[in-house]
Length: 162
Image 1 (tube, rainbow, N blue to C red):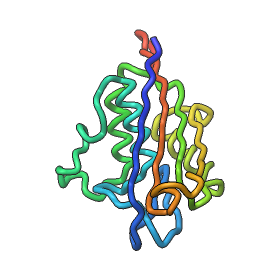
Image 2: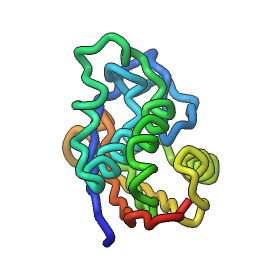
Image 3: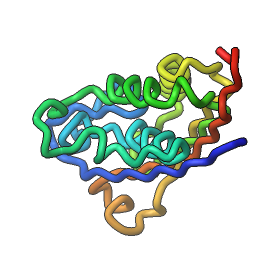
Image 4: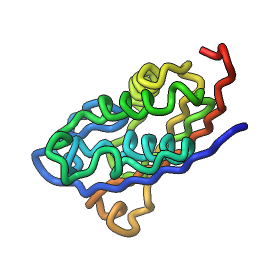
């Protein structure tokens, strides 16, 4: 059986904080504000994976009220999520959308896809990443924040399926 999950995340932009998207540090005067590194792409991905596996959401696993997760690297959190689902499910597909007016992610797309694929233990072809603007509408359009969407498909592992 194939299971599908959807994830969404949003964070405000603030001055003087590192900008991390898809596990890649991007030069910028503004970064995303959050309890962890606020990587909207990886947060949306984790929610999609957890949802597909029926395991809740990242707020349940890494609550912002828990100081252990303050400034956490979202790549480490994603590795923990993968460990939760890995015994029972195989990741079949990951589709990510970054919604932001800037920066352009084309120069970083290959590194993001490769890093995400490596963290998930899948081929790069399993991970798709695209970006769009909000056409200058709303908080994203005004450059006040970023959002991300993720859709994942998991297949149940069969005996002997590694």
